Image 1: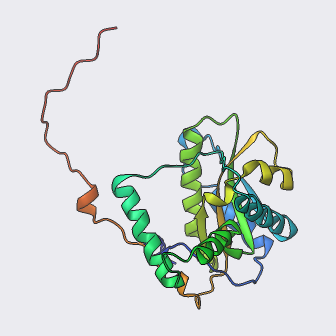
Image 2: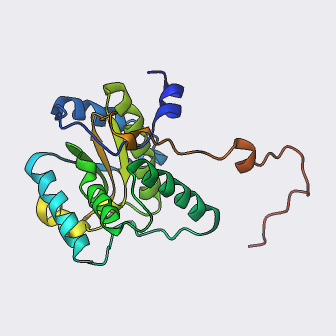
Length: 232
């Protein structure tokens, strides 16, 4: 697939076929991912791949903790969206629930769908993007974002779909306990990954993007003289 086509066609997949992904394919995908841009070649990213019993255990623990209303405490924090950012989130949510045929007041179906997300949308594998505690934030978070996008795009080459998730790593201590990931590793984000089930209406969802002119400022002329450096 052409790179530009991949960028324009990539979307979040929220339903997968049960078919497992060969480990060799996941290894090749991560081998591609490690060539993501990295400032001063710090390469602050690390990966954890969950499949089989380990993935099942994390899925079950995620749902249990959420149902028991345990306060989330993700390693990367929880963003609070306001203004236009919140409006975009709400617009996406409305379209998502329309496709899922979940009514505004249907609390049971909404909770069931949230549980699905905490189960990595029942994907056969999940990739956790992590960093060692010695890797400084925000550089490590920025690089985690770059490598996550590279993986999501490269996955299309193998016929795979992904959904980049923060909520699925809301309870990093539980994930560390189950998997044996050291406490020194920060778990930033997860990618649910598998072969997309395109028969599911939810996978027809395509989020909209702002037009370029609405988010771009162009500067070519000098409005003010270049200021001198401050005195030491």
